[in-house]
Image (cartoon, rainbow, N blue to C red; front, side, top):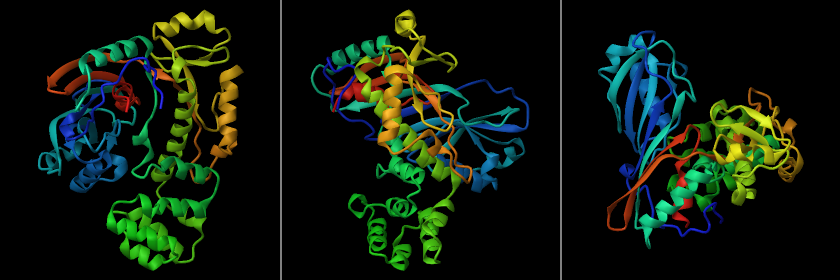
Length: 396
């Protein structure tokens, strides 16, 4: 494993020993107008996913999924605060709503439904326990380097699912290997901890569909439906494409993320250096432009105005030229993919976009809050992961 700050010792330690150790708060993109057809709920949750929260709200208010808006997904193993929107005519029911592992802190009225990505960023408060060495001094030195050079914009393990195979599932979908997709989706028994799920996966690998369906945990509804389709004699392709579109797109997105992470790692030591042929991204608005002569634009990189980028591959991906472009094409070829591979039926086509190789670290501070543990505070742009900062700090 390598790091941008490889010359500085890490602080070791661990985090997420309790939800309070990892706190995330959305920074809204705009204030509520106090009038309109939508009700914004400012909600605190702990120990549940955003999807679980939304399901509770949908059941409690008798709403369809499409009637609920949210700006981003928040970690289950954390104490998080985020905004959710519902129709304003549900105000009276909201006041009586009881949520498990979540509470509504406040409400406000607004004219538009909340949309995915409608947030300015996220504010983090993270406690790292069992640190080693001169942890505070080392952490301050690392943060100073990250402030100057930016943070490698890695997605990290949380993007790849509980078994770490979400990107592999997306790749199998792109390669149209539907039988292997079913096998991977049910999971490798050797990697599964849940006894019922482990048993179901073992039965499936032995061709015992009836037993696999009976053994699956109750909450694994999508897996059960897929196996039931197979039991009825449907093809693997039909059973896979019958899965919810949002689930399949999640796997495809994970494949995009894994390929992007590989490109970041290839340039990790020089993530703050432009190359001829790069496509640069403006941090202020996400606009992209091609770099003809890197030296002429490097000062803008050093001021964190722009950064080199890599693709989240898709049918309309803008690819770099020169050395960066060759690396992008080579990675696709190694994966058995072309841009046309992302042109899928059933509303699954991924068009792609560019993502900066690094992101700016803002409002970062550190406090030694006890023997061998530190509390970190920092703000990140939307779509960027705190684990990228922690990876540089902890170095284990």
